Length: 244
Image (cartoon, rainbow, N blue to C red; front, side, top):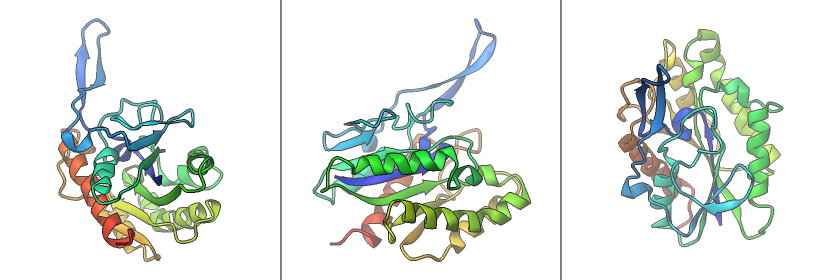
């Protein structure tokens, strides 16, 4: 299998199709996924996901349902990415979802639970099969770092450390990393975006989500935007990292 790690916060975990409704019995607003799976995100027998229990299973939306368990998950970029890659790569794909909504980059530092869990899951994904290989880390995170100037200014160094650490801990010194420049956030969004686009490390690419449609919350991508983003990530991977 060609294996891809999906990590970051809510827009990677997927909120496409997650809608709010008022529950008159509970007297509060609840959220649920509308269950709509675009054709670009349909499941395929050759695409698998590593479950929370570290077992391979057929991949389907929502990819992060048993990973980002504190929130309601919907459509993210992962399945759209996988289907776009699969059209050009003749081998099974494995997706390793690791994203968690509302998390700041300091929570992804080495030694923190989220980071260590991501590394553990990544290692587990190649444990049973010496022909499988981790091909890239897809990273979409940063909205939680836009509300304070201090966090935004520290973002570049924190992200560079994450790249260095994950490559070291997986023993993959040139692991391709495709990060998404955020499309939403608070007061210091542009500062975080600048940091993301300024990272100049070998085999690190940046795909810009700005301009993709946001939901009414002005924070999360719509289902259609997630489809587009997945295809953009696939194009970046195929163009820069997949040998012809």
